[in-house]
Length: 339
Image (cartoon, rainbow, N blue to C red; front, side, top):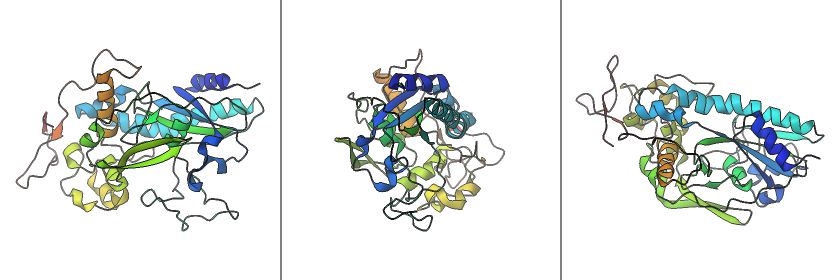
């Protein structure tokens, strides 16, 4: 008989750092387009795998000297290589026990609901039967991880685990194996310090407004997120924190455009990495500031000998008579220790 502990052992052996299991009733009331039960109606359990982002992947961005390790390995490689390989291995091993396993990789081929309006996008697809959602259904990985007992959603809307704080990525799979679910997380990781909002280069996290959902009878609340500002910041749309930003462009060219539109491709002298847009901001607020704070508080079980931030965070200084913050072609970056 396949047990929950056997599945967790499989996941760890295949490369996952954490594994949690949710019962399907915990998704009662979920929006149709985000309800995993529509993917596999006969599923009896949902398994969530978490893959830590090693702290060293962010070291180069923290120093302002090397951006490839986080954007390539901590983002693109995890999403498109490491996690799918592990997910396939776990699916195969569950199916070797006679149960079906349906993977939910952390990839988006064009969502069936708009990231901005959260409304269905019928111009992309149509339901195959009456009453079904538009394909592709896209469950929220943070909600799934909460339902699987791995941790909580912080004020930044990042998922936080007691082991790694905000530093992990997530995938999931559904199975008809009757697995014992994990209890919901009962601890408290986020203390609403607001450093995520203060250090976000896009100022995408509200300090006054919140959004919330109820999962398995538990209310989850986070700071209201401006998805357009977040998407532009993620690409490095604020030249104060991006040495690759070209002086021929201005940030206001991206306003109101999800991921910055075509102009952001012209403004960044940096190609895609592992099929992903480069995450040049390096999760400055939602991951780095949060991780630093949680480590300083000593609440994470993963400990380090030395603190992550060892000097003040860098910020690009003005260059040229127009006061634009950036680097002119063939000039070294002029960095300062001031916030």
